[in-house]
Length: 107
Image 1 (cartoon, one colour):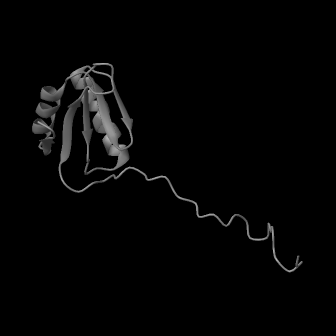
Image 2 (cartoon, helix red, strand yellow):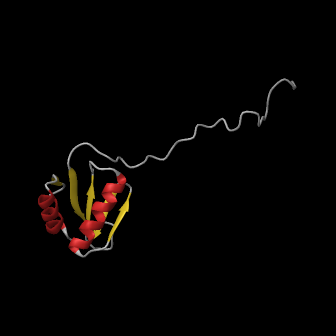
Image 3 (tube, one colour):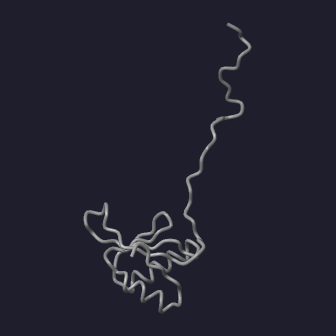
């Protein structure tokens, strides 16, 4: 066996390519989309909004404002806003009042 072959070296660090986790696609082109989901949620309805043409901070502020308006719990995860319950009509009215475009997906 030859002694010339390099088996291990810590000189240059890891040689593996590190993949970065995909971040949310904020801001996204096109109008904001909304749908009602019940699958995988124990039969409970959740109103989901995504594809926001705003920055993450603006989306969180918008979520907070809508949350107070519709009196519903909400969360922001993976560039999506999820409201507890079926609040599609109230969210649609809010977007219309603010002059923002909203598209119903899966309807």
